[in-house]
Image (tube, rainbow, N blue to C red; front, side, top):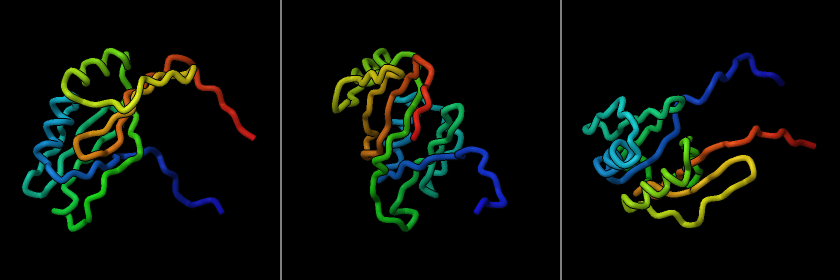
Amino acid sequence: MTPNFQIHHVDFVSAPTRDLDRAVAFYGQTLGLECSVHFADDGFAEFETGNLTINVFDAEKMGLEFAPNPSLCALHVDNVEAAREELEAAGIKFPAGTIDTGVCHMAPFKDPDGNGLMLHHRYAPRTIRGD
């Protein structure tokens, strides 16, 4: 069955937090993302990446059980190693070395609440593989 609607793009991804002030500082100051919305009393803020919004919300304030999102949100940077070094200097821990897939460089890490993030840079065209 083919749906009668079309999905055009992803509007946002969510990153639950237990401490909105800490999350706002991390996404805004540590990562340098523009904060487009910040409603402290309502428990959420949004940050712009250029093509996708990251919605940070206080899960418990929204009546939800807090659970970090382990799925990695890949953040494009021009130079993964340079960005990684800067984040490490700011106290961000990376669990392993930078990964070189032959197509891209990737460096996974987590925000202060345990939500999965990754520095990412594709340096070669993607090849399509299938069955």
